[in-house]
Every structure is written in structure tokens, then in C-alpha cells.
Amino acid sequence: MKKIFLYGAPASGKTTLGALLAGALGARHVDLDAEIAASAGRSIPEIFAAEGEAGFRGREAAALAAVCAADGAAVVSLGGGSLLRDANRWLCERAGEVFCLRTPSDEELQRRLGAAPGSRPLGDRARERAAHYASFPRRIEGWFDLGNSLVVVGRGIAGAVLAGERAAADETVARLYPGLFGDGGARLVASIPSGERHKNVGTVSSLWSAFAAAGLGRRDRVAAVGGGVTGDIVGFASATWMRGMDWINVPTTLLSMVDASTGGKTGFDLPEGKNLVGAFHSPRLVVVDADFLATLPPETLRQGRAEMVKHELVGGRLPGAAGGMPSAEEIAANLAVKVGVVKEDPFERTGRRMVLNCGHTVGHAVEALSGYRISHGEAVAIGCCEEARIAARRGLAPASWPAEIAARFASEELPTEIPPEIDRNRIDETMKGDKKRAGDVVAFALPCGWSDVRIENIDLGAETLFHNRTTPCA
Image (tube, rainbow, N blue to C red; front, side):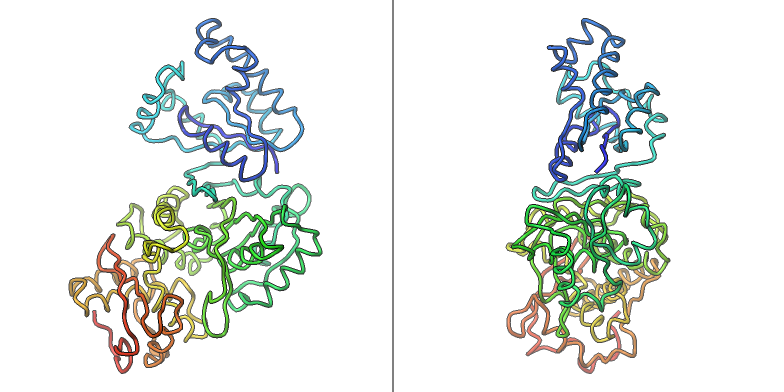
């Protein structure tokens, strides 16, 4: 990896994130203020009191020059004004990449500054330096610490993280982004065919062979660069290679960014159903870089929007316009819903995490019965709408609710009903193959309102949901 410099307003989280990111990458963490204090033999406030800001800036420039000249990978947490001098900025941009963290709200900044009075002699300079911080193109808009997995969301950040890593990439991504691989980038050890039909044991076996050829051992790691299929199968291959090897997930589709990238579920499909073979194996690091969205066609973006709406069903309506390409900030806010649920139930032991399966029981059946001609995102949209209709029929939601949720998915240009070519009489039987079953009893995560998803056990051996039902209950 290149040196990564974390920059931004005081109290934006540079030191905390720096330590976590360095740990995930196996790199050295440098807190520049700590280096300055150690060299001076006094605290930052004491340096300011004795030497003024000019004296501090001189020490800061010298410390930064030493860090930039040092060999080896490092994540460096900078002070809030370290790069105000053009010479300092030039040094950092020559030695690596600068990631600028999003400035928290005024209220949050004041809370953080108030929690450590006197620790920042210059106080809050975020507003007056806003244009300066905005001049850094590589941005971090949000990050989440899941304990065994760090999730970072931003723009223009993937290349610096991937540099020097060994990677398995979707073949389409490798073609579209050649600069990520080869000289100065990641070493490509495996190319993965695009599409759900390749999410099978044959592809996993080819990855194991590629790992062997690359000489990867259990103390190494591999980066998965691609959509949900790539992340699922590279994650599973890593989980089972020499009984467990670390991995980094770099999702490149909106669908994988807001859903499959986070939570640690890995696996592959069988002819009998989706994701029937799998393991929990969280990536050490998830890098969500919104710049990848620029090469996605509108229909692929819509698939991701389906999961974003599903997260609204779980966590409540979120700000942002319908349709089009979401910003990194929107993605971070949406992903926060899933992260919150995963934190409560990381291994699906309490039942809380099941709410994230909203729309998926019906959706997976529809997807399979279409021969996977219906995309996963479209199937989730259909599944959420159909499961809302089930909730209404069972008295768990108002009669008007299915139409409301259908309108929300329709605003994203997503389907809301099962296509006529799908044999509805086969849906009940197909759902009996769902992972969340006990005999014929299947656990549904039914959407009953915004921020209201309820787990309902339905005995499909005794009750019919779709057989002979030809029209939806809207």
C-alpha cells in the first residue's frame, strides 16, 4: 500500500480511524501530533503556550518531513492544519495519498471538542477552513467499526488501499479499471467471470487453485474487487483456504456497497437454491468507493437502490432524491442502517439480524424461478412488495400499506409485482428451500411499515401464500 494520510477538521476522527485502518492493513500508525509531542518532550498545548503557533508549525513541518521520508507502509493521522502550508501538502501527495474526512456537524464538533477541553489550542477552525478541506479530492464520508471489520465509505480511496495487495477481481472490473492492477497497483491473482451463474463451487475451486499458485498462506490476505458475487465467493474461498485467511472487500456495484459488502456472510449457490453453502468470515476491511458507480448502467444502479429502499423499511425513511447515482454520503447513511443491525446480531443468533432478510424469502424464490433472468435487486423489490401484501392480508399492516411501499419502489423504476411468466403455483414450494426454515415452517421478515419489520413464522405445509392466487392484494 501507499502511505495514507488522514486529514480534516480537528475532532473529525482522524486519530481513531487511523489506528483502526492501520490495524486492518497491517501497517504502522503514526499520529503526527503524538510524534511532535514526543520530540518536544511536552504536550501540544504546552508547545503552543511556549512557542506560539509559528513554533508549533515549524516542529510540525519537520515531523511530517521525517514521516514522509521513512520507508514502509503507514497510515498517518495529521493535525487539522498540517497541510495549510503548500510544502507540507506537496510532501504528503508525493509520498502517498491524502484522504480528507468529512467534517462533522457543528453540533457534533462542539460535543467532541467539549469532551476534551484544552486539548486543541486553536479550537474549532472547521468553518473558516472549509474551502481548504474541500480542495482534497479523495474523501471519507463515513466509517464504521464492527470490531472484527472496518468499513470505510468515500470517493477516490480504493486505489491507495489496493496498492501492493494481491487481488481477485471481477473480469469486467479488471477491464474497466486497469490502473488498479499491475505496476503501482494490486497484483491480480485471479479473474472472476461476471454474473450470478458463476457463483458456484467451480469458481470457488478455481480460486483455491489461484491462491495456491500465488503462494498465499493463512497469514496472507487477498482483496476481492467486484460486485456481490465476487465478494461472496472470494470471502468464502478465503474462509476455507488453509482454514481461514484474511481478506479485504472492495465492492464495485451499488448493490454490493449497501448490502453484500458488510456483515461477514460469504458463500455460493447450488442448483437447489441461493447461498445454501456459506460461512461467516468478515473482511478485515471494506472499502466503499463511490467513484466505481460512474461506470454502472442505470439498470445496475437501480438494483442497488432496491436494497437502499429495503434499509428504509428496516430503519426508517432517509433523505435523498429517488433515482440516479447516490452520493458517498447517502451510501454511508444508508449503510449505517445495516451496520447497526449487524452490530446487534453479528452471527444471526438473537434473531434481530433477520429483519435484513425483508423481501428476500419471496425474492429469492422469484429470482430462482426466473432462471436468474430477474436480477437480485429487482427480485428484492418484488419480494418486499409481495411480503407487504402478505403482511396486510394477515392483519399486520394497514390495507393501504402495500400500495405505499409499491409506490416507493416504483419511484426507483423497480418492478413491484411478480411477472406473469413466473408460475405462481411454484413459489410456495420453492420458498420451502429457504435457509430460514424448520421443516415447512419458514421465517419471513415482513415489512409492516417504515422502520417496522416483523418476523413471522409461516407453515407453508399448512398454509398457501401463492398457490392459485393470481392477483396481488394491493
